[in-house]
Structure formats: C-alpha cells, structure tokens
Length: 483
Ligand SMILES: NC(=O)c1ccc[n+]([C@@H]2O[C@H](COP(=O)([O-])OP(=O)(O)OC[C@H]3O[C@@H](n4cnc5c(N)ncnc54)[C@H](O)[C@@H]3O)[C@@H](O)[C@H]2O)c1
Ligand SMILES: O=C[C@H](O)CS(=O)(=O)O
Image (cartoon, rainbow, N blue to C red; front, side, top):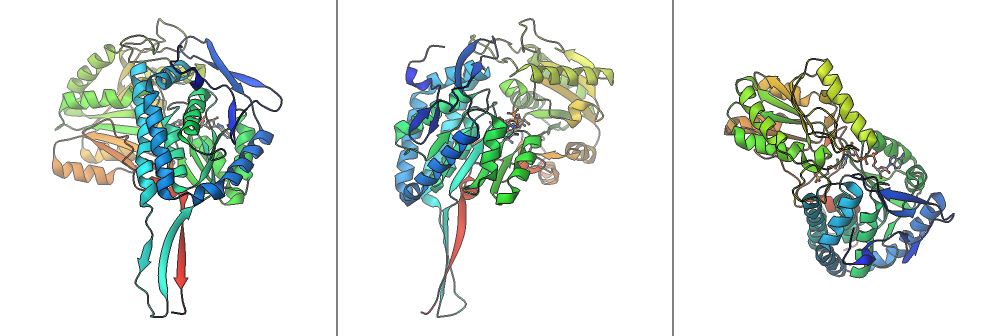
C-alpha cells in the first residue's frame, strides 16, 4: 500500500490533541482480508483511556458549542475538501483493511465526504420556532441546542461513511464525540480524524479510541457525561448497548441489521430489475445492511428473471480489491465465510437449486463464488437471517398480497425494493412494506440527502437528510413572561 500522503497512516489513537498509545503499550494488528498480510497496528485501549477521552470531549464541548453555526460549517467544509483531496489514499487504505474493490472504495470516500458536505450546510439551518402566544404577557420560543458529549461505535463494512454519518451531524450541531471504530478497520477512522485535525477541528472535539470493544463500550454507555450514543452494527450488539445505556438514559441512534426483500412483479422491466438486484445484492460483496437478502419474483416472470440475474452474477470478477476490474472482494473474515457456507448448505438441503456459484472461490482465503439459488423457501436460514455475503436466494410468489406478506415476514425493517411500472401498484406496495426505506425501480437508495434508518429490529432514529442533525440537538422551550 503506497500512500501519496504518508501522514494518513496513523497508528496511534487520538485523545484530545494527542496521538497516544495504550497505557500498557499493548497493540493489535490490522490485516488485509484478501491476503492476511498485516498492514499496520493500533493501540489496544480500554476503560482508562476511554475515560480520558470522555473527559477530553467534555472539556472541549463549551468552546465548541460557543462557536457560531457558520464557524462550525466552515471547518466542516474544510474537512470535506481535505477528504476529497485525499480520496485516492483513503481508498487505498480502505481496500487494504476492508477488502472492497478500489472502485467501490473510491465511491465510499466520496459518499462519506458527502455527509460532511451536507452537514456543513445543515449546521446553519437548525431553526427554532416562535409560537403565537396564548396570552399577551408572554412569548413562546423554541430553540435547538447541542446534546453535548456523544459517543459513536461503528462497523467495518463502510469504514468511513458510517463514521461521517455520525460525526458530521454531531460536530455540525455543536456536540463533541468519542468514536470507537471497528477493530477490523481502524486505520480509515484514524486517517479521517487526522484530516479533521488538519481542517481545524479543535482538540477533544473528535476523539478516536481503538481497542477492547467491551471495555470501551462499557465506559461509553455507563458514563453520565456521555449524553448520546450512536451505534451502527448488528441488532444483537445494538440491543446490548441500548440496555447498557438505560441507567444513564442516553439519547440513542441505532442503525442495525436488515433482511431486505427485493420484489420483482410481472409488470417490471426485467433487465432493469436484474441490474437493480445486482447493485443491491452484490455491493461490497453482499456485506451491506441494505443488501437485497431475499429476492421475490412473480411466478410468470420467474424463469426469465432468474436467467438474466444468473448471467450477470456469473460475469462478476472475484479478485483482490486492488486488481483491475475486481467487482467482488473477499469476505471480511472466516466467521463471515462460514455463515455464507452455512446458508448455502442449509438452502440446498431444504430443496434449493444451484444456478451458479455455491462454493469457496479458487483464490482461497475468504473469497466466495457469487451465488444464485433457485426455489428458495421461507423456512431456509437465508430467508430468516441476514446472509451478509454474495448469495442471492430467489423465491417465487403468485399474487401482490402474497409478495407483501412474504416481504414483511421478518423481525427486521430497514430497507425493501420492488420493481413495477404500475403506478397504483407502486403506491399500494410502497405503503404496505414495513421498512424505513423503499427503493422503487432502483437498487441503490443510500444518499446523504435522505433519512437513512429502519423500523422494528432494524433500529431507532435516522441518519442523513434534514432529520439527521436532530439526533444531536435538544429542543428547549423558552416562556418569556412579564411582558
Ligand atoms: N443499519 C445500518 O446502517 C448498518 C450499517 C452497517 C452495518 N450494519 C449491521 O452491522 C452488522 C455487521 O457489522 P459488524 O459485524 O461490525 O457488527 P457488530 O455489531 O459485530 O460490530 C459493530 C461495532 O460494534 C462493536 N462491538 C461489538 N460488540 C460490542 C460490545 N459488546 N460493546 C461495545 N461495542 C461492541 C464492534 O467492535 C464494532 O465497532 C450487520 O448486522 C449489518 O446489518 C447496519
Ligand atoms: O451497511 C449499510 C450501510 O448503511 C451502507 S450504505 O449507507 O447503504 O451505503
């Protein structure tokens, strides 16, 4: 990995203005999932360092919230500019530690930066209200103020975007933050924090603590100083962190697991639907929370759609992310590989028919062949659990009502997709799906301008859009009497 700006390879954590090692000097390695090669190491911090980071964020908060919204906006805009100026290096770093193809990594850098750009603009639009008073001796005013010290815990699958989707609105609102990135992808987080420093984000406003998730999370969730926790990751961990946060009654943002249905109706443009399914299912080698996890196809077009999708899947290029033309990288680790293998084996044992793929890739390691399984049924694990890998299970349905019932038959409710050219059907189905986000005739829905989030066991709150900054603001009602 050759970086044009070697300063971006940060191998210490950031607390206040200081890049620090763990108190006991312990470290953990960061490995390239495509080769297993160690590409760096970071401090293995725990409770004591986390407490220092909380104190640092608390000390920095008064001056940061006193900055005007415009001053914070200008600093965030500079941060955006620096991220984009270093796009190639950040992409190389991301592919090295997460494995995604370079083209996708470059795309994620721009996507991550778009949250900084968006909230640099939103910073100046946290409007309050003046409410018509019920009496002439008083006035009713509502203002919005920063929540205070916040914490963020983020996953490995989008090493930059899941961070900026939290840090950008937090800093824009006038909050400070302690971030614990995923242990698999800390280098991207530290590079991002370095660029924040270079942009003029004062010491203590953004702290990055790497290390023992349980110890760090325990401190962040139990501290009364930390007024909000924003978590992106599995539903199981989200539930745990929410329970750990109960005693301190923190504001919570939880972006959790998904099990997205992708529905192809008989009036769909089948080529467009196949392209959309590819974009949704195989992005990041199937490792996104909004990946199509169940593909439901109306019986009359099932065989035609299956053929179109299978041809596209068979054409995917599995390779290390740095290889030209790579469109599928390695899975993040052996646990992820074993889960994919388990889902495929379970489906085949329960009657699924293999159309393409279905085995570990010849490259070895955690590479897996992009797979299409036909005749999938709701009793299969891949219907009930998030596969988080390059496996498309095709289910058959007959009626619109059956499709909606199948689509909603999950504890999750993050995203859903469907293809139809019947306007009345589009409105009926979009309103009937029990999710937070619906892709209609598209497989890609993630934009900084839109509110991202789910219902049921997929989480709480929204990130991005005009709603995202509200997660970091408190409403205060002023009743001005004696007039
Ligand atoms: N809804 C979304 O926006 C979204 C986005 C990306 C990923 N995800 C979900 O995340 C999951 C995959 O990501 P993952 O494997 O990193 O998830 P994960 O829940 O295992 O880990 C996420 C983060 O939580 C930390 N963590 C784990 N256990 C912890 C504990 N006990 N205390 C404190 N922190 C702890 C990890 O170190 C990591 O930083 C999938 O379920 C995916 O759907 C959701
Ligand atoms: O894994 C899901 C993330 O939210 C990624 S994205 O926002 O869909 O790009």
